[in-house]
Image (tube, rainbow, N blue to C red; front, side, top):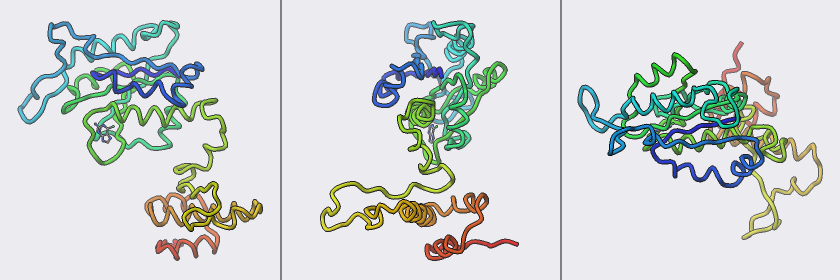
Length: 263
Ligand code: 6GU
């Protein structure tokens, strides 16, 4: 996979050198390029913003540098020295007014050969940039959730981390991807390690039993309880895909989850 990021704060993306993503880059599993939007300005002050048309608070990113950098990313070779065969990227535009990013979208993006991020600052990017970009690439405004960040950089980091760890070979133990929160609608079960007693607190006995079926049943129950308690909104999606056992229904009732048993 190839990822391009356009920003006025390239240093915000420095963490992409670290840990799992840094290793994936060095292993050639993902190629990431960060572009400074100001390199696509032509005035002495490298201006990227201006007052909003129609008035109001803050500043808006001017369209010209964005147009030029997106031209570059769409050009044959796409600014990628490794060849002219790179497809046009899907353009992700982090914004609190975007479509909600989630694990299914992470899987979808992980299946693409090429994505790019347009990281806006201030009150956002002149809308014509996205309109024009949409004539030559898929454009998707995406939001992490219902709160406001100062710009798209932190959101791009989060999305890249969620996507890159799904690429084949990036996470060593592929099994560890399967039982995670947001895979299969339930949150992850609680985990423990040594020592067996810590500050008077025991690791749950069943985990030392060596009885794999009992451990799996306990973990499933914990996932269900935790999801019902912390994220009752996810239970409906789980119920839509599973016919619950009596035991599962009992657990949900114990956790105060009222389900409509339907027809
Ligand atoms: Cl993707 N961008 C910004 N600026 N704020 C956000 C967001 C994204 N998601 C939630 N808040």
